[in-house]
Length: 220
Image (cartoon, rainbow, N blue to C red; front, side, top):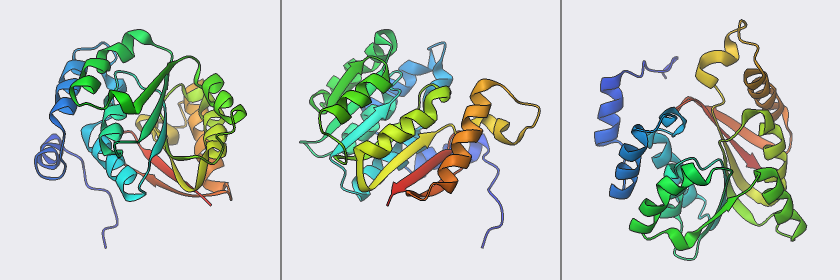
């Protein structure tokens, strides 16, 4: 039994990319396109995209919520894992960023599965609840403004079915969660979220050191 996490060197990462995952050609092209973007650091790593896609397959998800789409890599990864009649609600506030991914969604023939809403995600999620869609989603991915992470978590918990999964990105926040010298609003929000989810009796949670940290919360 290993007692520690391997040092994730660039060489080990390259090995995983070559031997431990399958990346659709459209995903690779979108990832390359995003690399030149000023905020490219916001994109999830491909091994995380592959991992979440397999989670979607493992729970036979048909309905997904994504909060924070950026240029659309994670949406594309999950949409590719959905069945032909699958549905992915993508919530973002930037037409500029999301427009980068649209040609790649079309190229991969998943555009019909993705319902992109350019509006504050809280408004979009609350509307879904008002329309009677509670307990109707299978998987959610939260990767947006950290200040609202707890609000997103609560609304997603209402919208997913029992046995559904909430995946929350950036929960390690570059290591800032354990750096006591870091006390900015985002870091405090993530610490609060982590403590809250870990003690929440409505879910079973597991924090994974992939990317910038990913928490999986399974609704009881």
